[in-house]
Image 1 (tube, rainbow, N blue to C red):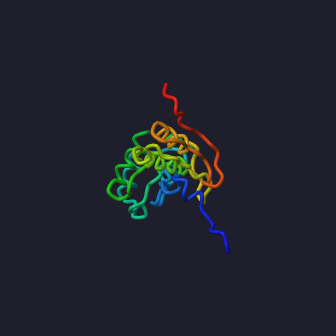
Image 2 (image 1 turned 90 degrees about the vertical axis):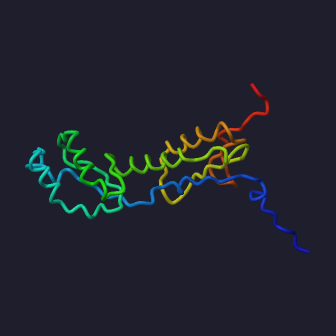
Length: 172
């Protein structure tokens, strides 16, 4: 008679939290100020305002606009504000960040929305490997968020974890 295979991981009550599920789902589109510089160096206010009025911004529709400048030029703060204002109502949102920074910000926002009470006295594994690069700040943030309520936090996969935190039975 064959022995029944028991999935000890499934029976352990461990909850796996995959931070990839907080990865941005919206596409990014870059707004490069370089395209609006006079001689590749200077932003002229009057010309810039006119260019923004006539620019086809449809490529930003329902995307996250990442505003930046790939040229080594000094861009006044008001210029970024004008771009953001022009994209308002077209882009999902405008960020003065590069793509890596935007991914980090969005993941941290999503972690901030986690209801810690869902993890009260649970054993949680924060999944460590995946298809997408998750910033280290996300792992720190989710640890800080869950540590006050969970029984334990581990990193990795349920079958092979690194202990991060374990609540002591002794109260201080």
